Image (cartoon, rainbow, N blue to C red; front, side):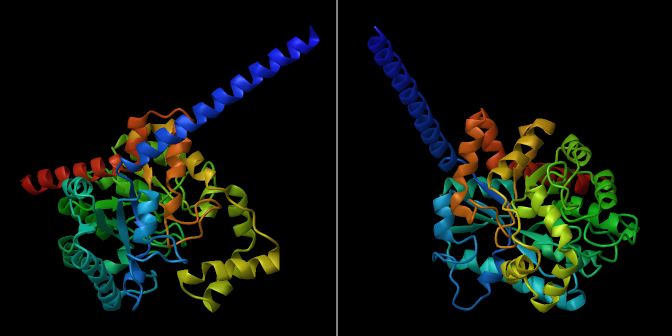
Length: 398
């Protein structure tokens, strides 16, 4: 009798394990189909300087960095905002000239690869690129210092295709406070508010990543269009000031905006953020010794020699931040803004080829497929379309 019961229980256990495995395989297959049939948009990728490097080719697979065309295809990434970035310490005519060189590099990429890359400036363009099986290439300008305190320069950038302006980078501008600097203006100056109004008229998204909290609230109040946080995560999960508080996320969403979750390891993992706080002074010294984003990992290695091994952040923390924001404001107001090629990535998200993990993780959490499609890219298209609509209304207003 005991033997028969043992056999029966064994068979039952085997049945359940097979059922679980089958269900798991089913979810994995569903996730794959969902991911690769979706518009997957990333609103902040810093690969742009590579386009200016002699010998570096976008359509070749590289062993360094996070983004190139082969890895984009592996990861199902079919739309991105190329970041037009330079340090906030670069200002004046040089900043304008360097920004134009970056913009020209993105234009040239689309011109050189018309069968693979489509330069997009509207929500309709993005959908058309997806329909044609091309990469939707847009541009976002990471830092108001590049407008050289000039609305005509801002209009020029818009005419060249820039579709969001991050009001500050890590340093204050002459008209806006940054989260990475000491407050100087108590948010936006009068000119800063004019910049926001001009962006609204131009149909260019107001981006509040990198700004001081007061700058965020000023921009939200002034803007007549919904705004974007192109690459920010949730401060309640990791205390970095670059992240957004729950109150800010709710206010952003209430006005129709979208928070695009950043993958930078110390922005998504609080233990790593706290380790970074401990090493802050040494980091500043090393940053002067090894300037440039390409030296992030070298600086990290030097810090670990002095302060011990840094905590490891897992790619799953990205999903935690997405999930927290969705629970806070709903799936209509959350997207992806990785900071690929501009930051250190968490373990398991070493480059853009790993993106399907996010879709599968959300599906396993019980997310509806329609909501996952919104998070992957649909919300970004909707937001850009609403900003375009607001601009037409403002230009038509007396």
